[in-house]
Structures are given as structure tokens and as C-alpha cells.
Image (cartoon, rainbow, N blue to C red):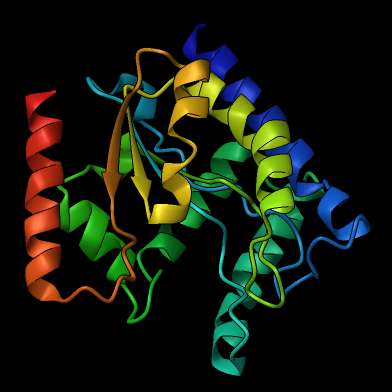
Length: 217
């Protein structure tokens, strides 16, 4: 698939996902402050990367604390604007990049772990969640995860065809075989979630291991 066609496929998948209300209609989850699906980052040079890497996490946090909600107002509006056709895919991704820098608790934790720790190039990497919507109760029922993976995430993985998928957090590890069914050549790497509680020594060892595995590939 040519790169232009790949971006068109991503745009279609994102637009369908951001309008999807299946899990809410089925009452599997309750809308959080950000009450629509949250398509994640695809680096604008992802398809030019020598080795295409996607970081896969479970689903977005509900961000229930008032200060988190306040900080998420611009990102929620960005999602609405993209959903409503007021922003193009490239505009949406370019704007999302600045928010990635603040992801995590404390802020910048996400970038510190995956970009600084594992050594990925953000502009050549992709990020995907198994389920794309946050739940007001910060739950992730299996029915929601499986449904979202089947309808949206599996199609995205097929469209971006990663060489390496980093499954981050134990709840994502069970999807390894599903990912390999979609992209048989994809190498699966397992790691802890960036907000783990295993301590600094365990994190350093884990990051070194994953970084070495990527270098060997």
C-alpha cells in the first residue's frame, strides 16, 4: 500500500472510531470527561522509518480530577474539531504532538519512559490503545476491549503494519496472537506500563532489555 493510501486508511479508521458509540449504547462503559474515542499518535515520518514501531497500551484514563479535566479541555476540543471535519488528520496529529509531551503523572512521564528510556523517535513511532475510549469509572471490561479491538484497533494495526509492537502493561499482552494474525511478520515485545510501581531499578533493567531487543531486531 502506498503511503498516501495508508494515510487515507488511517483517516477513515480514526473518523469512524471517533463517531462510534457502541460501548456507550450497550452500557459497557460510561462517558468520561473526554467522551469520544481518542485516536492516538502516528508519527508523521512513521512510514519512512527503517523499523516501524507501535506502542500499544490498554485505554485512556478517565482523568477525573478537576485539574486534569481543566487541562484536557483543549484536547477534547481538538477531538471534536477533527470529528466534525474542522481539522484534517495531519492538523490533528500535529496538534496532538504537543499534548504527548505532557502525558503521564508526573507530566512528561510517557515521553521519559518510551522516547527517552527505550530510545524511540516520536516522529517515527506510532501509539495505539486496545480500546480508544475512556470510562468514567476507569474500568476496562473485557467486552469493551474485545469489541473495540475487533472494530477499530485491528484495522489500524493492519493499516500501519508495524515491524515491532511493544505491548505495554500486562493487560495488553494477551493480544499478542491477535496482532500476529493481522501482521504475521510483526515482532512482539512485552514490557511494563509506564506508570508501573516496580521501582527505579526494575524500570532501568526493563528499559535496557527492551532497547537491546529493538537494536538486535
